[in-house]
Image (cartoon, rainbow over all chains, first blue to last red; front, side, top):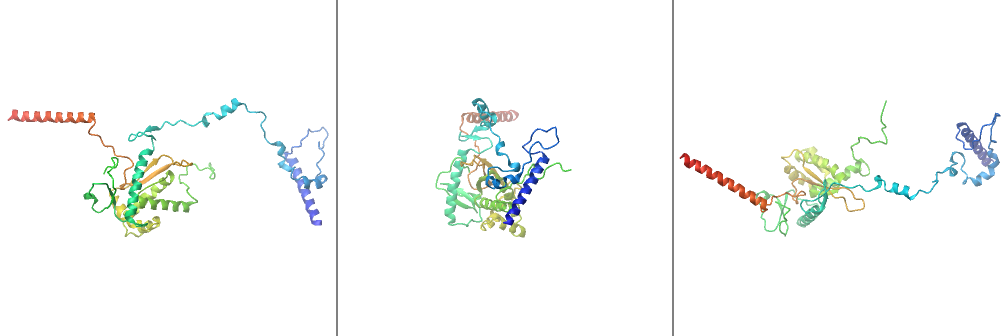
Length: 181
Length: 173
């Protein structure tokens, strides 16, 4: 019982110190006009008066600097549709026009200047996937990469002088026009 | 007096941060490099391909020292997590790039990934790989009209020159 009273009194004294500091720093919100007579214009806020009520109303009235619920920013007027339109359609919010699109010389699909053509790369990537499937079938399992070069030969092609020491990967189709030897 | 804030502003910092930290970044690049050495052509995000490119070229430089070199073998066994690629590196990739001093890899940008993230993609390959080329070689078509006409013109000119030479020879004789 004594301990709780002690804690309460400590709390009250701390709150009083805080209010005094606030008064001194000038950040208090409950200002009133100065008087000709020397003295406080407002009656000093006595916290012991509200001691019993404070515990109940703690949540609704945060004391000290957090007195901001009544002080939040809110729009004063409804923004008109014209103002809304100018904001929504300002240049920074519109999609930028690209001027680096050109047709691919091989297939005619559109591509970006600094990029490979998507269609041509898809063609090449499909063929490499099939070549890799053939390689996997030849190796027969994981982690069996041979220490020799590889060469891809299509139907009707015989290994030349350069392909003597290389592993030959056969693809059962005609050589595509874009894959020159 | 210090004129710049050291924290919170990264002006001029060129090192990329990838993964969960420097160690994670090295592990990630190691995996990508192993894949590159195995498949000789991979497609990843642009940032990763750009980072791996440096390490790929340095790995070839180490491989060129030969597999008897202690440091080279240590580097190769650290960077290649699949150990069947170490003989491939020393016996296939190093002799392939003997004549070249730099520029063993080629990186090309691809259209952005189809996923929601639309990430920038790139394809990274070692030069001299057995796959079809990324940039198709342009071959002049002999059978176009203009090329046929030019061919005929060239032949006519050589004929005339030949006639003139033989005439001069007969006249001199």
